[in-house]
Length: 274
Image (cartoon, rainbow, N blue to C red; front, side):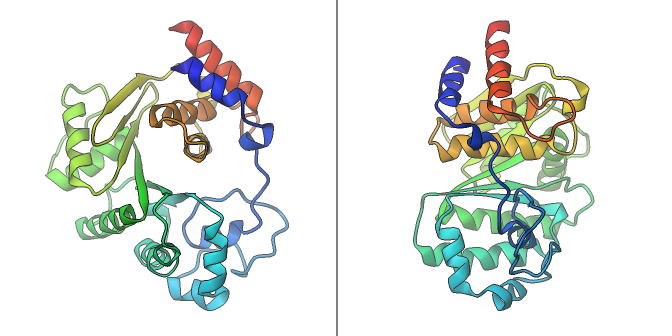
């Protein structure tokens, strides 16, 4: 499988792994959507701060222009819910006013919950309902690190003790989380493991060790870049997971994103070690 991903990476261009900064980055971030920032941006949103409500976005941009912007997209990676003010309002507004009227069902939506431990049950329940609403328009992936997965389990099922990916009950608990939510895929990862659950499968692998500097604030963003790139190129879902691990694990020290050659080297070394 690793060699299959390596071969697929070889067919992609350098710019696929280090795309140019997005012109509409401030606008997208104001809606709680991940976007590669740029220095000089002509933003409709009038700044890099997050809009307070969906109506603020609509009043500044207009529904038709938003439809044009998103009509050229297929994969939408959202920011951590816990970092987005008024996320439920913003995301449901996007869904109701832009995504659904475009009348497509080929979207790929990637959500991160963030750490829900300090959140109220009703707030978590609300945003999970919003995420589930996107499944009528495409595939929804919810990604969690092992701490976030443990926190979500506690909220949903009243569990009191923390657990990690090595816990003997972890597999059953992750499956229970997946079955409780209206999503198509659940990703859970730790420093040495990663897994993805779908309705028909449970795929788990051991992540190769990486230098300590790789575990930084950009690691999550780089994982999403790789996973989303796999989705954009119609890779098998397990291959998308592997590519996400490779893009997050192959960043050289002092850099924020990996180059294609570094990803290829990472995958090749990983395969040789098995």
